[in-house]
Length: 599
Image (cartoon, rainbow, N blue to C red; front, side):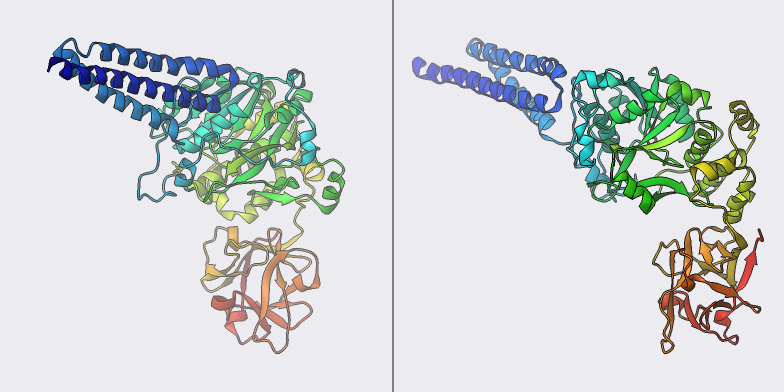
């Protein structure tokens, strides 16, 4: 009886040991695959040592416990405890490696804070956070560069030996950790290790300080946390002051750097430290997080409302670039989120205007300053970085709301750099005249010290495409309490009526000497005229000096087409927007009161 009872015990010892040994072997294989996938060759062995040693200890412990099983009752209880611990440990390790919500930086793993089940995925960040959280931190991206860019090889150490290392500065406030993590990971994974001196994260007083603290555990990442909300401008200045590399690279916190993004940027700055260079900014969909290549035939510009816009190069410029699509593109303005600049030049140029608040207008100001004070701005077609573009800001603007903050910042830029041409800005945005902009004496002194050129030079040599308005009247076009309004629409869309607000913007129109009814670079256009038609469509089209864009303001307030007896009419506004009908002075729907500011 005794021997019959001990045989199963010995068999259990063997089973426990074999089970533990099999599990340990499987874990070794899984760890090797996972670590090699997530680590560079330099850090693979270190990472394997960190994780495989505990697995080997687990294997040995299992053997010791199994061997001692038959000695005492206490040891029998230890086997049960060991079994529970083993299962728990196995589950934890599998969970650690199987999910896409982790990224191992060589020593540690980062757990992502996901959106809650049932929560609106757009609530926190104004983009689909669930889509972002579901992606790997080191996902593959399509190479969106022109094929000619790939002819330059940056793989050999000699090809980058002459390039300076850079400090990458990323500021963030309540950013989704998945997008912030992908930004950091893309910098590390798609840049030569020598060229990344450090990544400085400036946490602008986020609600969850642990986000930055966890990311700071990654090699080369430094964290600075503001003691109060400072905004993008002052946060970037803080990061730049702490940077120790000779070149600064500013990135937004929701970007993904593409292959060989950094080398062409650093090469241009190394050749001339007064160049400020930007990548082509690809689009990361705010809804699906699909990575979409952007056109390389764009440059940054603005209208007289001083709102940044992308605009296509002229046909002649595009044709000329076909010979060398890799050549840098001179740009009058940068978007501001992503650029590379020599640190000494950045400091000599006066960094940023730190009296600007939160966000907005800083790209305008630094663009004017670089050009007018002897530098240049370029877009480098062979550098690509994706960016999540949102329709709304996810964060608050302490001190007056986004509109007032943007107006204050923009006024500061206009008052310092635009000379007599600032009147065109105030004509386009009359609301701005009521917004205090603070003391600018130090910025005016900076302009004198740097011996900067006048704004007229900028218009003539950098951005002649903007043009100086030849205006007859500028203002709003009213019918009672309603005003002609672009409704935020674009080329090819209708216009309508909206309650007058007196703030310009969508309700600001210009009656030019050529007879155009103009809103920025769009003109009211009589698309088709038919005598028998119930109405004739009027759309916003790009101004082209054609006859169908020529109107005449008659005595009595009718706005008549110069060649055809039709007038702007609001009768069918709800169904068709503003239309053109046969002129009839008895119709109130054709009478307009033009409240103007004469230029």
